[in-house]
Image (cartoon, rainbow over all chains, first blue to last red; front, side):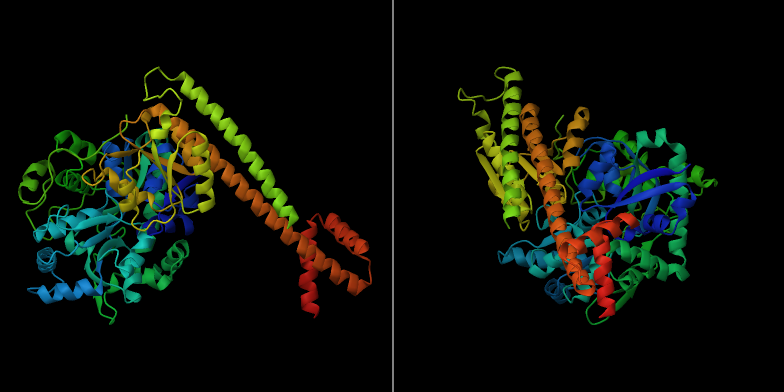
Amino acid sequence: MIEKLRIGYIPLVDATALLVAVDQGFAATEGLDVDLVREVSWSNVRDKLNLGLFDAAHLLSPIAVASSLGIGHVRVPLITPFNLGLNGNAITVSPRLYTALASLADGDLADPKVSARALARVVAERKARGAEPLNFGMTFPFSNHNYQFRFWMAAGGIDPDEDVRLVVLPPPYMVESLASGHVDCFCVGAPWNSVAVDAGLGRILHFGCEIVTRATEKVLAVREAWAAEKPATLAALTRALALGAEFADQPENVPAVSEIVGRRLDVAPELVVRTLTGKLKVAADGTVRASDNYIMISRDHAARPDPVQAAWIYAQIARWGQAPLSDELRAAAEAVFRPDLYDAALGIAPSPFDGEPRDGVGAFIGPNFVSADIAGHLKAWAIKRPGRPRLSLVR
Amino acid sequence: MTRKREHLAIQSDRFGEMAAEERHLAETRKGSEQPGSGNQSPGGQRDSTLKIVIVDESPIRAAILEDGLRDAGYVQVQRIDETRNLLARIYAIDPDVILIDLESPSRDMLEQMFQMSRVVKRPVAMFVDQSDSASIQAAVDAGVSAYIVDGLKKERITTILDLCISRFNAFSRLQSELDRAKDALEERKVIDRAKGVLMKAKSLTEEQAYALLRKTAMNENKKIVDIAQSVLTAAELFK
């Protein structure tokens, strides 16, 4: 029997596993007729998933956690049986900010500790002469982009809520906002960093994986109630995604995968190739930086949901005052990530990640992360915003 | 040209009807409300106090919405049709209700206001309620989303949302009718040109040429415009 599914996505390279699962025919093989619906905002994806207009969605992993906890919006429990990938973001700065950072750096700017300190000096210098604070573009209040920015700059001594302005921008607006001077720096997924570099408008300062080695970026999210209602469909979808992710991870398939993704995103396949191979041109002069961790699809247990990742996201939510800290909420966050469903769908024995980094996260600074002790983790940081969460809901 | 004008006239009549319908709806809702539940003034203009902002990149649709809201008694309505510095502009207006087109990527920017009560004077929330997903689903289907200031009574918002839904639906009907009219005009041009080709090539009168196109279309079970297009393509090849 053929089952029809509507799945929402935002045109970004980190939707690759989903796009390939459908366009390369793996979903059809599993008996699924998938209608991929391209969306313009994360709010739309979330709302249409929550309302049941979508069966599943390519979703920012922190939105899946926030929606399940009922913060920032109405509470709708979501779960994920499949991680569409780890990492894939980058931080891009304007040429002007790069020059300022370089002039105040006390070492190699490729080291985030050095760049964070340099940024703190730029911020202090601007404050001293009464200049407007710097603007940083990120994609959503509940996003790794937001949290990676905050984690990085706070390590240099910057209070992200007091010393700079973090502004939400839709990914397609990032490059023009950098060009117009509306923002000085942005953190976004592929292909937008490369677009800025190619246009000579920006320089990639950091890959997301240089801030946090393993960060679950997008998940395939479904409503918990839907998963309970249609376990066989969800298992079939999970298998199709696993096949899509494995296919995308084979070096010999990069051209075919880049064609599929380029077509869905309306960008040149060459831009997608750079992302998938982790070899990015970081500056207009042609300088390339390469990392095997830039984006991880399928390999190194990237696809299996890892509850430590959910706990890490919740720790950031708590650190920045988006929700209070409690063991109950932490457990609710962890329950969003369902490795059990992944294992069952693929018919494999549980195989949790047990490589480096040992804590499963690998932040560039600070103590190892321990899920059970988020309070202890937060004690390590001077800059945070605990206390009353600044959220409000209509009930 | 005359045809087009006629078409628009019909549309504006329809909006007139719609406004009446909406007023009726609004009246009914007002009537059913608990006495003293809002800040109702004796003149029935209690909603004139609400500040409403419309964020829509389609100026026509925004105007239709604004007119509808004004007709229903909301006098403080403002439009924002470009999204540069959107948040700053919204903070400056400090609205009670924000209506935004679902196709606008700027929705994500608005979500940031949940996080920034330090900047916006009052926290804002999207009008969704666990118990009211039917209403929000209708809004999403129509392509509109509403954000309201926390603490505003739900009934007051429902009226606004209902009005927006009917306006958005009317706008998309108008749009598709305009598209259809445009298509019809294009088809007419193709058929006229094909008639010309046939008249010249086969020395037919206009009526005969049209009859030939129609007969061929019927025989081949196709639309006349498709046959006409084939004639034009063939004529191009034989040039």
